[in-house]
Amino acid sequence: MPDPSERSMQHFSRAARAGVVPPSFSELVDAQRRRRRATVVGATGATLAVVALVATTVQATYDDQSAPTPPATSTRSPEPTLPTATTGERQELTADDIVGGRYSQIRDVAVAASDPDIRAVVWGDCPQRTSCDNTYAVAVTADGFEHRTVHRLNGQSAPAVQAVGDRFLVGAVPGAFLLDPDGTRTDVDVTRAAGPVQEGEVVISSWRSQHFAVDPSTATAHLITVPEGLITLQQGPDGRLTGAGFSSQVGRSVAMWSTDGGRNWDSQPFPPDFRNLLVDVISSEAPGVMAFVAGGDGATLFPFSKVYGSLDGGATWSTFEESPGDMAYVSWSLVQPNGSLLVSLDAWSDDRAGKPGSHPRGFYRSNGGNWSDLTFVDDSAEPDPEFLNSGYSVDDYTVDGSGEVRLWVSDYRGRTYESGPGIDSWTEIPAR
Image (cartoon, rainbow, N blue to C red; front, side, top):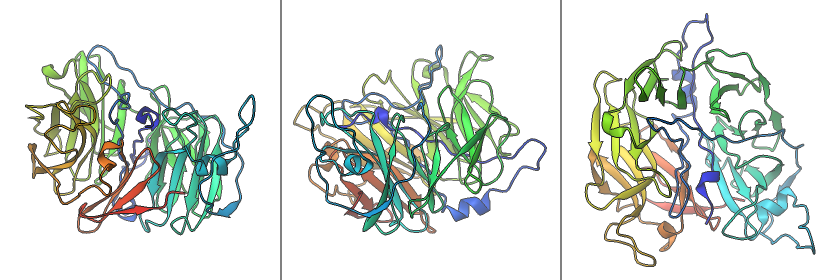
């Protein structure tokens, strides 16, 4: 099983440069069908991958990226093969070796908003099957992997990929590049000048708690200005920037948000009983709705203890208690366009080796805005009898015009599944 801590958590936002009128975000949001990246936290036995916010300590880990490699040539997708072994040191693997390796595992998946056959998948070489080298490659396709182009990602630690329209942004700054469906790659040029973000720019996080804005049309990036202490950052469909960080003024973690593209910020301290809990932002597709999930120490899994949120743009806040009996462990969460909460619960405290507990694993959704009242989504039966026990991860999602969510998930065996709108069906799709 892969270590989900190697999957980078991506954060998105839009804003405006200093001195420029705050932008309207509707055009860009409509173009991308209000898509947001999934936050991957972890599966059974995995190390916590979410950025942790503790009252007395603030720490963030980001990918250390280096310069990308030259373009690769386009090829028809071959059958997976095991790279040839050599005596002594292992043979240098090509991008095709990594993508097609028998023991390679999926690190991340991104799907274009306009066409699910346009997608990119990051693969990692895992010669020991239970652990992976820092050897990665990305495969991109415009036709559902009838054909593909591959690129090796030298020097990148657990690189991630995200869709930007019909293109893909691979890796983190510095070292990120844009990838077209035909395999053309364009290195992102970085300037250290900091400022608010222009409309159309995509915000990604990097190491040392820095956030960069990337303009996909020019392949340029710059540092953005954020409040002191802010760690995580996401954007809603209405352009709202939502983050979490530590405030030295109040002496504990706080929620932070901006409604004008990052020019001005508001904050709300988390309740005192959150002091020793890890906190992360929940992606939200509902305008004006902000949510945060809180759990325990995160040594292995992320306990689904509490959800803290506002349904009215920060005017009022509520705490929703989760898992009052057997503890559930959450790996992914989303506020849907209708305001309901959708979560993936990968384990329960009464699970035992080889014997699942009394609660089903999988997706749960709330009864409207009552985020404490969750029901198992039993019409989203797993696509394979062992799938929910295989350490799956939610890689990407979109929201269609009617507000229905579609998911893309994968497991350590390299299987990728696409759900129907509303998570009412599943289909296995090629990933290389």
